[in-house]
Image (cartoon, rainbow over all chains, first blue to last red; front, side):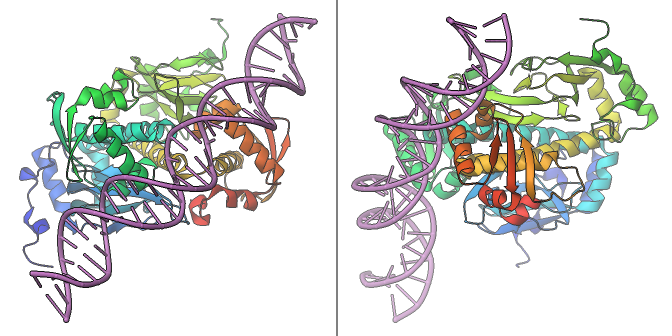
Length: 247
Length: 247
DNA sequence: CGGGGGGTTGATCTCCTTCAATCAACGTGG
DNA sequence: CCACGTTGATTGAAGGAGATCAACCCCCCG
């Protein structure tokens, strides 16, 4: 490993890019000092498995940059993504030693890790952290439940539209209302990963993307870059009712 | 409402049946006093909708007795169950006013409610409560993610087998190993509700149950009572690998 | 007796999977 | 520089699992 790899260059919480959204979002100066004392950075290459299902995990942490997947796999190879980790998302489970899901880096990933035992102690006496973690967990639970509706009841076209819609919203700067015209979306994953995410085959994903393109709902630029001329049109393709989507 | 309805008879936390498993599981005497000050009981009849998706909720709370469903519904009527609330499970979301899912009582339900605003305040200064709530939320998140694999990747037959298996395990007395022969299972729901759980139609549910019966995996006694001659056989029908199911 | 809720079964249809061929982009080594 | 293999993606053809539409049964209850 080279001396200058990017992970080692991030050192201070004060100029951390995810500071305003991660578990530490509500921390004060004193609390940041405590976090700095138990933290370290780790990097993973795209495609690398970060944690295997059932593994013992000696740390928890936040995604600083990159994208990672949580996956479940059946013996015969069928796999289902059960979570998407983007910058500022939290990995790991305080109070339990083994992870139930496999975590894989989709792109190169930098992780801000906290040693697990000290972090658990800190959690008990630092409401600013535990409150934020609770909030993030409840958000994930809501997202997981939304995803259950998608997996159980939506058609392939609705699934694809929903995915594009979700990625577009996640990229939107918080606070600003998403302006509805000509939104650019970059898919941070291959067709196969999309399929594993949506409970489809990669061929169906490809076909539905082509169909959405043919119908003018999206415009493709290469394989990964999507332009959405009219977000309202896309939203009507997701099958969600309007209030639900605004939530 | 009659003076003597069961809800009003529960009053003290000290003899509460869910005390050891609910959000308040780790509370001390002083903390119970604070909780008692902001709590009240509510009852719902079987079939009654307790909260509508999008509703404002002025309380959070725990299920004291009975069973309730969390459901998502699309405009055209497609519905998906996204959660099952049993005794001691928590309802509501501190920090957010409206519930994203519809909550329906399956059987008669008694709820121990806390006024929302005071509960949120209490949460910040009572790690014994917020820690427990975090733990419960993370458990629910794990359960939701297991369900995502079922919804996204399992065949109809595997879904039905999984559901029967899960109900059988839940009824088993904790600690005792489930003896593998002639297990009796009572389905606590109609075929339609099963379908909403599994992301299927009620016809498919019926057909697959018939198929499992024809193949000798289960024996039916009436519509709701199932006898499983060999749990191992049933488990092999779920598609889960052996360790996964034991988790 | 009629009616309705819950359940089963049949016939047909359709959406998605499966299997397979083809293509474009990219890197690598001769 | 080009042949070659690899990886990701698109598209086609065929088949199947589950949905849809519909008939019918059973049982309970008013």
